[in-house]
Length: 196
Image (cartoon, rainbow, N blue to C red; front, top):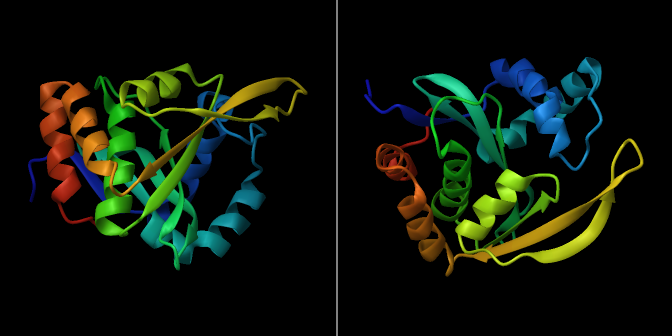
């Protein structure tokens, strides 16, 4: 039994509807590249199809043993050990800094557990929190093509890239920016075994 408040575990089949509810929340849809609501049947079919590969690439983040968010590796290329990372805070706990911690946790998982060589990510212009987090972590954004939303409006897209060689600097900077109690939790989670 661990006394850690922050724990990471593999996605489970029982997370199917939690992920669907989180993804369909207005707060998450606003900052997603696809901002349309996903029908329950479509999600069920997608989850069934993707679950075997998700086991190694989607991680549930828990606070006090309760799921609060996730991070994932997508478009993974086994030959080059590269892909994209994404994060989401499904529940907003009263823990300052947890959004920024998700980025550090996702990159730590990719570089330390999945042996990634390079990762990319994108953040929409409407996602002010993530844009601030990425800037504070020292990332330099490049502009992507504007994204057309379901309502016909557009939003800017910022693209980010990080290599294995850059990861230690990002990790140290990220940990240094976190509140001290959360810093200790994230540091421990980066080296702990991934729960099932």
